[in-house]
Image (cartoon, rainbow, N blue to C red; front, top):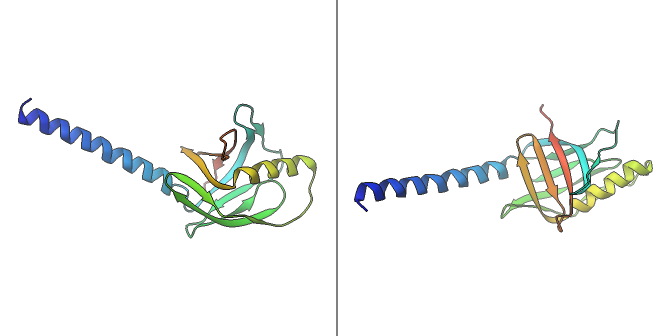
Length: 144
């Protein structure tokens, strides 16, 4: 192979690696300072729609705080993106009782937001999988 062809191939491979690294960094950084609303939750194979008429939120602050309301109670804690995963500290929550549908939704959400979990940002959709990747939350970006 001549030097020009080898140089071109090297540049193309390096460019591909740089672009993929930039894309991964963009996904990781895309949570900082964002707000989301719950669309569906539960089994990855059969998601339940979020309870109608209930305003939900999941807010990732730039300072590593996560907070919101996913059915009934307000919650807060810390998060970090590490090795391509989302790591949650234990979440603190208020302890109000609400109708069963809201409590079921919230309980499912809290089980997903535990420990180190995989997440995927695709456009205006955030999917967070539980540790086993059998359950997930699907959220939609809130534009302010």
